[in-house]
Length: 160
Image (tube, rainbow, N blue to C red; front, side, top):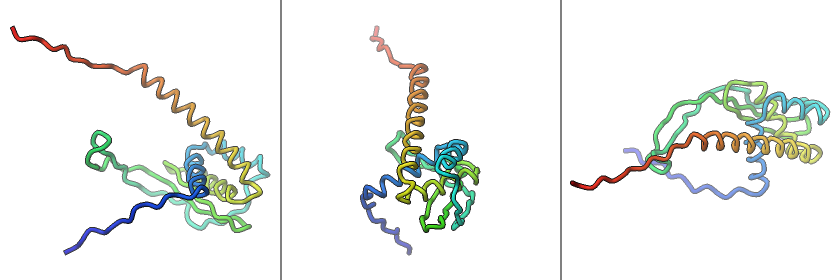
């Protein structure tokens, strides 16, 4: 008889870990062209050794009925991940939806540069630009969606 594995509650992230998590999330949504331009502005992409990948695989997308109900498997999505080490020893991680291996590697390089004191400010400024672009795109999508919203109501009929 097998027993269910116990999972421990997640520990709260430190400020540095939370900032890195946000950086990786923003780099995942940056375009390859934007990342190339940012690296060129920092003096070009440094030499980086691949520790993992870039490799493409599938992840299961899960949903909840009504947003809070039972979990169900919605489908699979293609994801590419990469881990690199810079010559100075900083390690960076990149992950993106889709199969673009070169963009994922660029994201990993930028994450590694964000871990170095010399480039941290430039990477954070780039990520702030990406975050503002994402916010603008999300606001535009929300406005377009709100314009097509239909409110349904029911008129109650009395008994004759």
